[in-house]
Structure formats: structure tokens, C-alpha cells
Image (cartoon, rainbow, N blue to C red; front, side):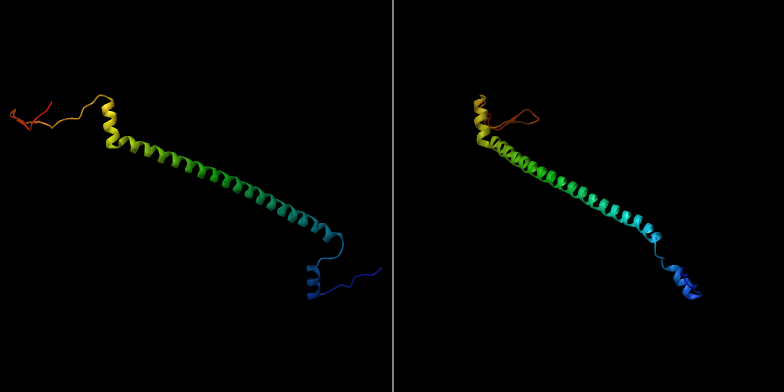
Length: 121
């Protein structure tokens, strides 16, 4: 049987800081390794979920941009139709189709009852 020599003073304090060989060091290392593996695995899964969410958001953004473009085109087409119906010639043509006639020269009444202008029927 070999005995370890007893250390004194500074050497004894340093010896206490160093781990002794055997199963104690192995047993303490196993939970740490397991913790590191679990943290790395959780981090990778978290990155995968984050990447998937960003990709889904990107697809939704593309769909919304396409829908916005379609609605903008539709709005411009409707505005062109409104402008065409509001043009003076279009208004005159539609008024004639409804049986309206152009108005003549206007006449104005003064407060004393006199007529200004030349009214026409």
C-alpha cells in the first residue's frame, strides 16, 4: 500500500484546489456535458423556429404586396372611368340622351322686380 505524502502549507492549499483522479471528477462532468448538449440543442431548435417564422412572414409580405398592386391597378382603372364619365362631352351626350336641352341666357331679378338680361325660353 502506498500512502500519499502529506503536504503542508502552500502545497496543501494548492493540492485541495486540484481535483483528485477517480470517479468523482467523471461524475461531476456528466451533468455539465448534458447541460451543454441540451442548451446547444435548444438553441438550434429556437433558431429553426425563428427562421421558419421569418420565412412565413416574408411570404405573407409578398402576398400583401401583390394584393396592394392589384388594388392600386383597380383603383387607377376606376379613376379613369370616372374621368371619362365626368368629361364635358360625355356629360352633354348623357344629358341629351335623358331629354335635357341646353340652357339659354340667364335672366336676373332685382329686388324692385325689374328683369336684367334677355331671357330666352
